Length: 207
View 1: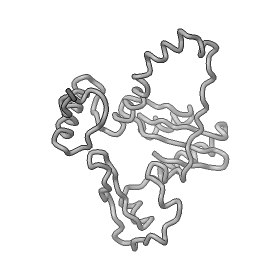
View 2 (view 1 turned 45 degrees about the vertical axis):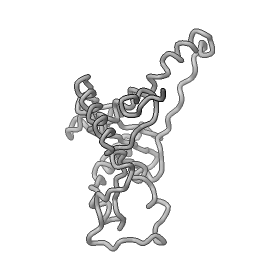
View 3 (view 1 turned 180 degrees about the vertical axis):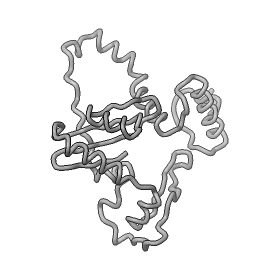
């Protein structure tokens, strides 16, 4: 993921899994097809008709991409990963070798951001809420929404799991294999045990 801007055009690019396609500005679709990018989501804010600034911002964002080691050398800080599989304990991914390591009193506010927010400098794309329909407060619609409530955010979770490589394919066999591995890790104490309903196999029921 990266953020770039040129004049009044701001570009927010996010990675997407294989087969997602190109969801972006029509001019950026042509650029992605020319350079070989097949799956990406790009949100463009500001001026969308200044094609020169739009192209400059997108290409600049692609050229400014760097590895974790390059980021550690540029900022003089450790790049750590906090994963739920390790109880959110930090694991060092990259450390500065050539540049000196900064002390705590030398850090600025921008140095304390997460990696996902670091390249956007704390900026987030504007997501306007959709206008509510006229039937939003009717009893039938409220009951239907309540029935769909347990399945909320499933599509967003599916896209993120595929993009991060947690699940190779969104099939029943792949999801069942991943759930069995997570179950074995939870019973062995490798990952933190979640709390909720349906854990009778792990936690004994109270008689």
